[in-house]
Length: 343
Image (cartoon, rainbow, N blue to C red; front, side, top):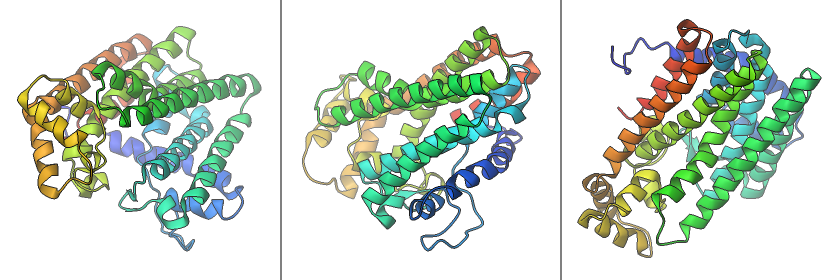
Protein backbone atom coordinates (compact mmCIF):
# COMPACT_ATOMS: atom_id res chain seq x y z
CA UNK A 1 0.00 0.00 0.00
CA UNK A 2 1.32 3.45 -0.89
CA UNK A 3 2.22 5.76 2.01
CA UNK A 4 0.05 8.32 0.23
CA UNK A 5 -3.02 6.04 0.53
CA UNK A 6 -6.00 8.26 1.22
CA UNK A 7 -7.16 5.90 3.98
CA UNK A 8 -4.33 7.09 6.21
CA UNK A 9 -6.15 7.96 9.47
CA UNK A 10 -3.63 10.67 10.45
CA UNK A 11 -5.85 13.61 9.34
CA UNK A 12 -8.58 12.35 11.66
CA UNK A 13 -6.01 12.02 14.44
CA UNK A 14 -4.94 15.63 13.89
CA UNK A 15 -8.55 16.80 14.01
CA UNK A 16 -9.13 14.86 17.23
CA UNK A 17 -5.99 16.38 18.73
CA UNK A 18 -7.21 19.89 17.92
CA UNK A 19 -10.51 19.17 19.70
CA UNK A 20 -8.75 17.79 22.76
CA UNK A 21 -6.22 20.59 23.21
CA UNK A 22 -8.63 23.39 22.34
CA UNK A 23 -10.14 23.83 25.86
CA UNK A 24 -6.84 24.16 27.77
CA UNK A 25 -5.38 26.37 25.03
CA UNK A 26 -8.39 28.69 25.03
CA UNK A 27 -8.37 28.86 28.81
CA UNK A 28 -4.69 29.80 28.76
CA UNK A 29 -5.19 32.47 26.09
CA UNK A 30 -8.23 33.86 27.94
CA UNK A 31 -5.96 34.55 30.91
CA UNK A 32 -3.71 36.75 28.77
CA UNK A 33 -4.20 40.54 28.99
CA UNK A 34 -5.62 42.56 26.13
CA UNK A 35 -4.61 43.23 23.40
CA UNK A 36 -2.42 40.12 23.52
CA UNK A 37 -5.45 37.89 24.05
CA UNK A 38 -7.06 39.10 20.83
CA UNK A 39 -3.82 38.93 18.83
CA UNK A 40 -3.18 35.38 20.03
CA UNK A 41 -6.73 34.40 19.13
CA UNK A 42 -6.24 35.91 15.68
CA UNK A 43 -2.94 34.11 15.12
CA UNK A 44 -4.52 30.82 16.21
CA UNK A 45 -7.41 31.33 13.79
CA UNK A 46 -10.11 31.62 16.43
CA UNK A 47 -11.09 35.25 15.76
CA UNK A 48 -10.74 37.82 13.02
CA UNK A 49 -8.75 41.04 13.44
CA UNK A 50 -11.74 42.68 15.17
CA UNK A 51 -12.13 39.86 17.69
CA UNK A 52 -15.19 38.24 16.07
CA UNK A 53 -15.36 34.45 16.32
CA UNK A 54 -14.36 32.71 13.08
CA UNK A 55 -15.55 29.25 14.09
CA UNK A 56 -12.14 27.97 13.08
CA UNK A 57 -8.87 26.81 14.61
CA UNK A 58 -5.64 27.32 12.72
CA UNK A 59 -2.64 25.07 12.53
CA UNK A 60 -2.09 21.41 11.73
CA UNK A 61 -1.53 20.38 15.38
CA UNK A 62 1.33 18.07 14.40
CA UNK A 63 3.34 18.58 17.59
CA UNK A 64 0.53 18.00 20.09
CA UNK A 65 -0.59 14.99 18.05
CA UNK A 66 2.91 13.59 18.40
CA UNK A 67 2.67 14.10 22.17
CA UNK A 68 -0.63 12.22 22.49
CA UNK A 69 0.42 9.45 20.13
CA UNK A 70 3.80 9.06 21.86
CA UNK A 71 1.99 8.53 25.17
CA UNK A 72 -0.06 5.80 23.54
CA UNK A 73 2.93 4.26 21.79
CA UNK A 74 4.55 3.32 25.11
CA UNK A 75 1.31 1.82 26.39
CA UNK A 76 0.10 4.85 28.32
CA UNK A 77 -3.13 6.86 28.40
CA UNK A 78 -3.07 9.75 25.90
CA UNK A 79 -5.52 11.67 28.09
CA UNK A 80 -2.73 12.18 30.63
CA UNK A 81 -0.79 14.15 27.99
CA UNK A 82 -3.53 16.54 26.81
CA UNK A 83 -2.44 19.56 28.87
CA UNK A 84 1.28 19.08 28.05
CA UNK A 85 0.30 18.74 24.37
CA UNK A 86 -1.57 22.06 24.60
CA UNK A 87 1.50 23.61 26.20
CA UNK A 88 3.71 22.45 23.32
CA UNK A 89 1.29 23.85 20.75
CA UNK A 90 1.28 27.24 22.50
CA UNK A 91 5.08 27.22 22.60
CA UNK A 92 5.19 26.32 18.90
CA UNK A 93 2.90 29.22 18.04
CA UNK A 94 5.08 31.55 20.10
CA UNK A 95 7.93 30.64 17.73
CA UNK A 96 5.73 31.17 14.66
CA UNK A 97 4.67 34.67 15.71
CA UNK A 98 8.30 35.61 16.32
CA UNK A 99 9.48 34.00 13.06
CA UNK A 100 6.89 35.90 11.02
CA UNK A 101 7.86 39.21 12.64
CA UNK A 102 11.59 38.58 12.23
CA UNK A 103 11.36 37.35 8.64
CA UNK A 104 8.78 39.91 7.53
CA UNK A 105 6.42 37.17 6.29
CA UNK A 106 3.01 38.61 5.52
CA UNK A 107 0.97 35.45 5.00
CA UNK A 108 0.35 32.43 7.21
CA UNK A 109 -2.51 29.95 6.99
CA UNK A 110 -4.01 31.81 4.04
CA UNK A 111 -4.38 35.19 5.77
CA UNK A 112 -2.24 38.13 6.91
CA UNK A 113 0.23 37.40 9.69
CA UNK A 114 -0.36 38.80 13.16
CA UNK A 115 2.49 41.31 13.00
CA UNK A 116 1.31 42.69 9.64
CA UNK A 117 -2.15 43.35 11.13
CA UNK A 118 -1.33 44.47 14.68
CA UNK A 119 2.26 45.70 14.40
CA UNK A 120 5.59 43.98 14.94
CA UNK A 121 6.09 44.83 18.63
CA UNK A 122 2.58 43.91 19.73
CA UNK A 123 2.96 40.59 17.92
CA UNK A 124 6.30 39.88 19.61
CA UNK A 125 4.82 40.67 23.04
CA UNK A 126 1.94 38.34 22.25
CA UNK A 127 4.39 35.58 21.40
CA UNK A 128 6.15 36.15 24.71
CA UNK A 129 2.82 35.92 26.56
CA UNK A 130 2.00 32.66 24.75
CA UNK A 131 5.31 31.18 25.91
CA UNK A 132 4.57 32.25 29.49
CA UNK A 133 1.17 30.55 29.33
CA UNK A 134 2.72 27.43 27.83
CA UNK A 135 4.99 27.17 30.86
CA UNK A 136 2.07 27.93 33.18
CA UNK A 137 0.17 24.98 31.70
CA UNK A 138 3.05 22.63 32.48
CA UNK A 139 3.19 24.03 36.02
CA UNK A 140 -0.35 22.73 36.65
CA UNK A 141 0.80 19.12 36.23
CA UNK A 142 1.96 16.63 38.88
CA UNK A 143 5.04 18.14 40.51
CA UNK A 144 7.84 15.81 39.38
CA UNK A 145 6.50 15.60 35.83
CA UNK A 146 5.97 19.36 35.72
CA UNK A 147 9.61 19.97 36.61
CA UNK A 148 10.94 17.43 34.11
CA UNK A 149 8.67 18.43 31.24
CA UNK A 150 9.39 22.14 31.81
CA UNK A 151 13.11 21.40 31.62
CA UNK A 152 12.59 19.41 28.41
CA UNK A 153 10.55 22.19 26.80
CA UNK A 154 12.89 25.01 27.79
CA UNK A 155 15.92 23.01 26.59
CA UNK A 156 14.19 22.40 23.26
CA UNK A 157 13.40 26.09 22.92
CA UNK A 158 17.01 27.04 23.65
CA UNK A 159 18.11 24.64 20.89
CA UNK A 160 15.49 26.17 18.61
CA UNK A 161 16.71 29.69 19.39
CA UNK A 162 20.28 28.64 18.68
CA UNK A 163 19.15 27.22 15.35
CA UNK A 164 17.28 30.42 14.55
CA UNK A 165 20.35 32.49 15.43
CA UNK A 166 22.51 30.32 13.21
CA UNK A 167 19.96 30.69 10.40
CA UNK A 168 20.14 34.48 10.67
CA UNK A 169 23.92 34.31 10.47
CA UNK A 170 23.83 32.09 7.38
CA UNK A 171 21.62 34.63 5.58
CA UNK A 172 24.53 37.08 5.43
CA UNK A 173 27.13 34.61 4.18
CA UNK A 174 27.70 33.85 0.51
CA UNK A 175 29.22 30.42 1.18
CA UNK A 176 27.53 27.85 3.44
CA UNK A 177 27.97 24.11 3.75
CA UNK A 178 25.28 21.45 3.72
CA UNK A 179 26.53 20.23 7.11
CA UNK A 180 25.99 23.70 8.62
CA UNK A 181 22.45 23.99 7.31
CA UNK A 182 21.63 20.44 8.40
CA UNK A 183 22.88 21.11 11.94
CA UNK A 184 20.85 24.32 12.04
CA UNK A 185 17.68 22.45 11.02
CA UNK A 186 18.18 19.78 13.68
CA UNK A 187 17.95 22.55 16.25
CA UNK A 188 15.42 24.85 14.65
CA UNK A 189 12.88 22.19 13.66
CA UNK A 190 13.95 18.87 15.14
CA UNK A 191 14.27 20.03 18.75
CA UNK A 192 10.60 20.83 19.34
CA UNK A 193 9.29 17.76 17.53
CA UNK A 194 11.70 15.63 19.58
CA UNK A 195 10.48 17.36 22.73
CA UNK A 196 6.84 16.68 21.81
CA UNK A 197 7.56 12.97 21.49
CA UNK A 198 9.73 12.90 24.62
CA UNK A 199 7.12 14.59 26.81
CA UNK A 200 4.41 12.32 25.43
CA UNK A 201 6.45 9.24 26.32
CA UNK A 202 7.08 10.71 29.78
CA UNK A 203 3.37 11.24 30.46
CA UNK A 204 2.66 7.80 29.01
CA UNK A 205 4.91 6.44 31.79
CA UNK A 206 7.48 5.09 29.37
CA UNK A 207 10.82 3.75 30.54
CA UNK A 208 13.93 5.95 30.24
CA UNK A 209 14.93 3.89 27.20
CA UNK A 210 11.53 4.40 25.57
CA UNK A 211 11.61 8.15 26.28
CA UNK A 212 15.07 8.37 24.67
CA UNK A 213 14.02 6.38 21.59
CA UNK A 214 10.91 8.53 21.12
CA UNK A 215 13.06 11.66 21.33
CA UNK A 216 15.33 10.26 18.61
CA UNK A 217 12.28 9.41 16.50
CA UNK A 218 11.15 13.03 16.84
CA UNK A 219 14.56 14.39 15.86
CA UNK A 220 14.62 12.43 12.61
CA UNK A 221 10.98 13.21 11.90
CA UNK A 222 11.73 16.91 12.44
CA UNK A 223 14.47 16.74 9.85
CA UNK A 224 12.18 14.98 7.37
CA UNK A 225 9.46 17.55 8.14
CA UNK A 226 11.80 20.45 7.33
CA UNK A 227 13.09 18.85 4.14
CA UNK A 228 9.53 18.49 2.87
CA UNK A 229 8.71 22.04 4.05
CA UNK A 230 11.70 23.33 2.10
CA UNK A 231 10.47 21.56 -1.03
CA UNK A 232 7.02 23.09 -0.56
CA UNK A 233 8.60 26.51 0.07
CA UNK A 234 9.78 26.49 -3.55
CA UNK A 235 7.41 24.24 -5.49
CA UNK A 236 4.36 24.03 -3.22
CA UNK A 237 0.85 25.00 -4.27
CA UNK A 238 -0.09 28.26 -2.48
CA UNK A 239 -3.63 26.92 -2.07
CA UNK A 240 -2.18 24.19 0.16
CA UNK A 241 0.78 25.93 1.77
CA UNK A 242 -0.89 29.25 2.53
CA UNK A 243 2.23 31.04 1.24
CA UNK A 244 3.09 32.66 -2.07
CA UNK A 245 4.73 30.62 -4.83
CA UNK A 246 8.56 30.47 -4.64
CA UNK A 247 8.32 32.14 -1.22
CA UNK A 248 11.70 30.82 -0.03
CA UNK A 249 13.40 31.97 -3.24
CA UNK A 250 11.94 35.47 -2.93
CA UNK A 251 13.74 35.74 0.42
CA UNK A 252 16.88 34.06 -1.02
CA UNK A 253 16.57 31.55 1.83
CA UNK A 254 19.39 29.00 1.95
CA UNK A 255 17.10 26.06 2.54
CA UNK A 256 18.30 22.47 2.31
CA UNK A 257 17.48 21.85 -1.39
CA UNK A 258 18.96 25.24 -2.29
CA UNK A 259 22.15 24.54 -0.35
CA UNK A 260 22.43 21.07 -1.90
CA UNK A 261 22.21 22.71 -5.32
CA UNK A 262 24.68 25.47 -4.47
CA UNK A 263 27.36 23.00 -3.33
CA UNK A 264 26.66 20.49 -6.14
CA UNK A 265 29.61 21.60 -8.26
CA UNK A 266 27.35 21.76 -11.31
CA UNK A 267 26.85 24.49 -13.90
CA UNK A 268 23.28 24.84 -12.70
CA UNK A 269 24.51 25.33 -9.14
CA UNK A 270 26.94 28.03 -10.27
CA UNK A 271 24.17 29.87 -12.13
CA UNK A 272 21.93 29.61 -9.07
CA UNK A 273 24.72 31.16 -6.97
CA UNK A 274 24.68 34.20 -9.26
CA UNK A 275 21.00 34.74 -8.43
CA UNK A 276 21.60 34.24 -4.70
CA UNK A 277 24.60 36.57 -4.55
CA UNK A 278 22.85 39.36 -6.45
CA UNK A 279 21.17 42.47 -5.08
CA UNK A 280 17.59 43.60 -5.40
CA UNK A 281 14.40 41.56 -5.75
CA UNK A 282 14.28 38.71 -8.23
CA UNK A 283 11.83 39.01 -11.11
CA UNK A 284 9.16 36.40 -11.76
CA UNK A 285 11.26 35.01 -14.58
CA UNK A 286 14.35 34.83 -12.39
CA UNK A 287 12.42 33.04 -9.65
CA UNK A 288 11.16 30.46 -12.14
CA UNK A 289 14.68 29.98 -13.49
CA UNK A 290 16.11 29.61 -9.98
CA UNK A 291 13.56 26.90 -9.17
CA UNK A 292 14.50 25.13 -12.41
CA UNK A 293 18.21 25.37 -11.60
CA UNK A 294 17.72 23.71 -8.21
CA UNK A 295 16.09 20.78 -9.99
CA UNK A 296 18.86 20.62 -12.61
CA UNK A 297 21.54 20.71 -9.91
CA UNK A 298 19.87 17.81 -8.10
CA UNK A 299 18.72 19.78 -5.05
CA UNK A 300 15.09 18.69 -5.12
CA UNK A 301 15.85 15.01 -5.69
CA UNK A 302 18.47 15.08 -2.93
CA UNK A 303 15.96 16.62 -0.50
CA UNK A 304 13.37 13.96 -1.31
CA UNK A 305 15.88 11.13 -0.83
CA UNK A 306 17.15 12.64 2.39
CA UNK A 307 13.61 13.08 3.73
CA UNK A 308 12.95 9.39 3.09
CA UNK A 309 16.25 8.47 4.78
CA UNK A 310 15.37 10.53 7.87
CA UNK A 311 11.92 8.94 7.92
CA UNK A 312 13.43 5.45 7.86
CA UNK A 313 15.91 6.33 10.61
CA UNK A 314 13.12 7.69 12.77
CA UNK A 315 10.94 4.62 12.26
CA UNK A 316 13.81 2.46 13.47
CA UNK A 317 13.90 4.35 16.76
CA UNK A 318 10.10 4.26 17.01
CA UNK A 319 10.02 0.49 16.73
CA UNK A 320 12.61 0.26 19.53
CA UNK A 321 10.33 2.24 21.84
CA UNK A 322 6.78 1.12 21.23
CA UNK A 323 4.88 -1.49 23.20
CA UNK A 324 3.64 -3.17 20.00
CA UNK A 325 3.15 -2.52 16.28
CA UNK A 326 -0.43 -1.57 17.05
CA UNK A 327 0.75 1.05 19.53
CA UNK A 328 3.18 2.41 16.92
CA UNK A 329 0.51 2.72 14.21
CA UNK A 330 -0.64 6.25 15.04
CA UNK A 331 2.86 7.73 14.98
CA UNK A 332 3.68 5.83 11.78
CA UNK A 333 0.56 7.18 10.06
CA UNK A 334 1.39 10.73 11.09
CA UNK A 335 5.01 10.35 9.97
CA UNK A 336 3.83 9.07 6.58
CA UNK A 337 1.46 12.01 6.23
CA UNK A 338 4.36 14.39 6.87
CA UNK A 339 6.70 12.72 4.40
CA UNK A 340 4.13 12.58 1.59
CA UNK A 341 3.05 16.25 1.67
CA UNK A 342 4.95 17.19 -1.50
CA UNK A 343 3.32 14.49 -3.65
